[in-house]
Image 1: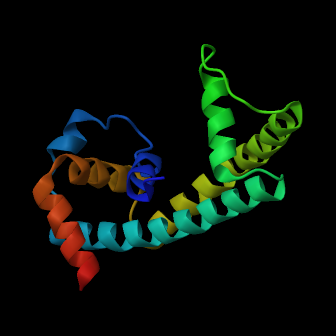
Image 2: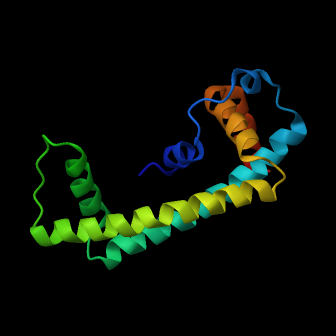
Length: 145
């Protein structure tokens, strides 16, 4: 799994922000808050992913097998070589992972607020970072400090 892209997609909660929010400049103070919040959310996301992996493995599936069955379940034309038992394990693991999602989202929202930002402000800056290579570079430099 590409963790960075997965993290960015999880963090991109809103597809679009309002036009006015997109036109705003990001101050150095806002960017610093964003960078700190982003790093905290990223760490929490990694913990959440580890919990999800544990849930899947506790059901008796490898992450690869879980993903293979899951992809096939999303595509009616796809065929997967999985026993009925593995399909039951997948279903059980999926239900447990989905049940974790609300808790994870609330935790991430709380982390963002902990750094003095609203979720909307975080999303707006995150969207700008994703679309602006200079801001991406600035964020990477911030992490290397």
